[in-house]
Image (cartoon, rainbow, N blue to C red; front, side, top):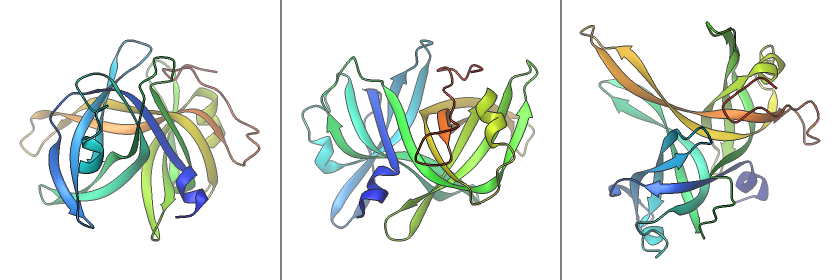
Length: 219
């Protein structure tokens, strides 16, 4: 795998595995399991993020009952649910690190290309938000399609960018609950996962980038 494909999608998460990993699939003779990691925010809220981890890494003694730090890539895949194809996200774990309380518990650095026109809007509280879908290249001619959300000046910075624009993004992975009516008109609670952008630029120099607050405050 090329160096670029190893560094264009890097995630580091520190937290607690809050459920027993469940067997998912096998690839090249190695079993993979699904679980969730609970990661604290500075606001004392929690992000609960799905992960996929190999049986080899599950055997690591650092995957005990205490806090754990993992590194990997944020990946997307399509899954048929109730007859409809849905885009799902998971952090594919590549390594386990020694837990460090000084380390930022939730970081992601991705480089990719806008693959859908950005959607800009304002909230009832006049906060500016822009939704971006980023295609991030992966090995074997695959791509991950990662929803990202920009706030404030970052939202204004990207709102008119064309499809195909290359972006370098630093942020965190966040989970967000929302209500949606099902086919019977009943409200169901759903969970969405997205990259909340802290810094963004259009080239390797890092120029024209903005640092947002941890909860998306205006720069």
